Length: 291
Length: 251
Image 1 (cartoon, one colour):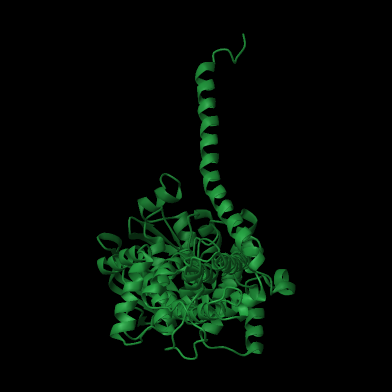
Image 2 (cartoon, each protein chain N blue to C red):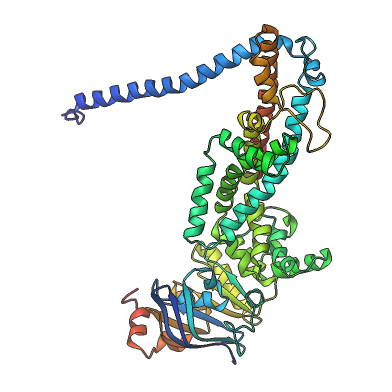
């Protein structure tokens, strides 16, 4: 008597068919995303690769496509980052420390928490409108670099707060206990035990938030980033432009030469984004080994 | 042996739960006192009132008096940082910081303002020697504390607690996560340390209490049923419940 005889072969065969077909469906679902992305990338590279030249980095925008560059956009984006990264780091991590370590766990903090999570998902154009009302009009900062940078800071703040909170929460209770049991105050525990352990997570969050900000266009259009800027901002209140604005401008022109220029600019923007993401991964891996 | 710690009509509530009921107890100086009893009997809770670690649990309320060398540690006179410097603690799971062995030991002294490299070197060496770990780690003090074994980590945690120069050392089931050989090493260490420190240990292991402690306290349902010299408590307990517990009839 074969011990395998009484197994329900028909039912098993059915299960196998189901397994195989679902496997195919999942593969298909993944491929749709990957293929779309690849087509997009290949298209951009075909259009933009031949135009990639140092001129793009050194020339200001111009009416003639062959002279045009995105120096002002590149520098504008860089200035925005220089303001945004430290500001959002301090505010975001500060808020996360308060909410995780100091705030009493009551209804109010839960409400604040809910709001922050919701804000992280608010469309960026809404932040643009807020920036316009708050910085441009109310604080009379005008259509300036600082208005744009502050608006972007508001945009990424919830993302950074949530990422930092998660990183802080991931530090085991026992590490805090160890510190408190040695006579540490709360701040000593936070600064010497909690933050060093959560810094990789926090930095990853900040870099990813920064890479989101560097690609954002809508809020900058609303707070009045100019599309044609043939100079570099010299002060915080000068007019400015940014890479995605420049790309938007070029792509929306009728001439093919400008469209190709836009494609080249996209390649540069993508390269910067990839660089930022790689940095985030490297930081995470480097510190994870020490924990 | 003179009394160092004294609880008088001590009651502790976690919100509605009455975790310690009218505890009256004295703990002698420079000796080992063991808290035994079944799970949830309040032994860890009482241990954690001694360095006020319960303060961090929301809804904890304390009534009665708990004095260390005559000072009520829940009064305004005592700030919790000083108390914890004087009353060190070792936890159930070894919990070294993800830092080097050296920085783990120096963490406490640095908290309390010691910056001199020479002084810190000295503290690290004496603390590791006191915790019988120096010979095993002296050549790689810069290595991560997480790279050594669990038993070594626990001795590192003891050394870390000793580095701030406490008078009292609390051990909350400090060997329950360790293998028998590591446990034995820690028990031997406790024997060595009791000349210099007042040690209070919670243990789920009665035999351990019998082996290493001078005085044993038996807890049941938040009450102290009986406390006495270890030898007396284990050989000739006064209360029937103690007798039942140590002879293994429940728990």
